[in-house]
Length: 264
Image 1 (cartoon, rainbow, N blue to C red):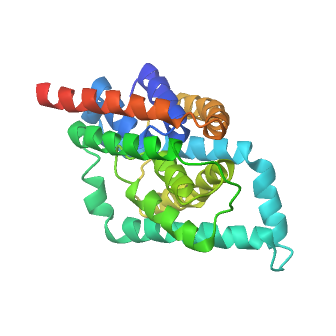
Image 2 (image 1 turned 120 degrees about the vertical axis):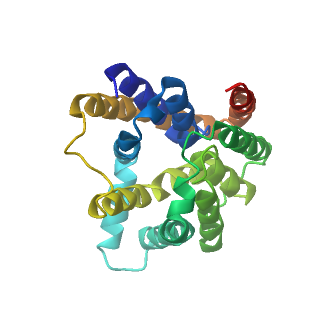
C-alpha cells in the first residue's frame, strides 16, 4: 500500500465511521478504485488499524463520559452509570453472535462486491430519511431499546449499511432523544472494536511482521484526525435533524456503485 493510498483510506475511514454513510462500504469502494484488492494480505490489517484509529478518536471525544462511566462502575452501586454499561452490554450481544457464528460468511461480502455495497447504501438512505422525519423527544434509551439498537448494529456489519446511521436511526425511530441516540451509538461500538482487534491478534489473522509500517502509521493518523472532526460534526448534525442530506448522498453513491459494477 502506497502512502497516498493510506492517507485516502484513512480519511475515508475517519469520516465515514461517524458520518452515516457506511465506513465499510466506502472502504470497499475505495479499495476497488485504488486497486487495493490486489494486496489482500494487507486488506484486513489496514481495516483493523483504521478502525482502531477511529475507536481512539471516539474515546477522545467522549473521554468525560467514559471516565464518568468507570467512576460509577467502581462505586459498586446501582446507579445511572451501571445501568448505562448494562445497556451497552445488551447492545453488543447480536453483533457478538454474528461475529462468532457467521464470521466466514460475513467476510465473503468484503471482497470488492461493490454492487452489493450500492444496494445496502440505498437501504441506509431509507433509514436516514425516516429518522430525519421523526419527532424530537427527551426520552432516554431503555434496556429493550438497547437490544433492538444492537440488532441494528449487527445488521450494519454488512458493507454498505452505515453502523452509525442504522443505530442512530433505529434509536430515534424508537422515540429516543437524538443527542442521546448519537452518544449511545458511538459509545456502544468501542468494546466491539477492541474485542474484534484482540480476537484477530490472538487468532493470528493479523501479521505485522511483513507489514509496511510507514503507510499504516500515516493512515492511522489520517483516520484519527478526520475521525475527531467527523464525530464532533455528526453530533451537531443529529441535533439539527440534517440526516436527509446524507440520505441523498447515500442514494447518489449507491447508484454510482451499482452502475460502476455493471460497467466493470
